[in-house]
Length: 185
Image 1 (cartoon, rainbow, N blue to C red):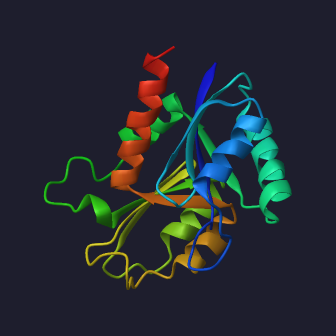
Image 2 (tube, rainbow, N blue to C red):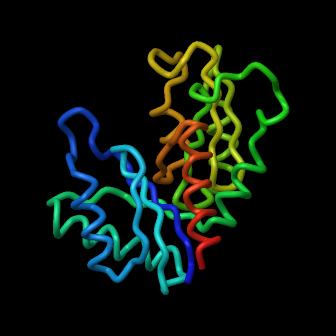
């Protein structure tokens, strides 16, 4: 079975797209997903599936979530191996003194292509530092994420690909959960 990490975009933000994690787990279990776990309230799911195709799995999840909750958040999926690759590509890994809560990894649904990545790199970032590789975008916010100078909407327009971001602490926790599931097989 394949272990997946799923990120739901835009759930439980203020009063927007509200969902309880126990109901989300039940939706996942109704799709025959196994060992379903959620992490915090922002739509992070780790599970096992007989389905190995991430696009098919994401489409199934999106459809089931829409049927249960009445809205269809984009679902970004990675296998444990792909998640580890994203962690290994972290351009900030060798720097000391960085606050992990200020490092965002924005996981993209697909590779936006070279031209789109170049456009995104050209968005003025002032204090923030942005790197984009294949289907991950890494942004460090030295002054925190609350009031960034970077116009993230402009970055998303340049990339023209759906994605969902998590801070570095969450990225590491989700890997830990996925590795535990893989070890239990």
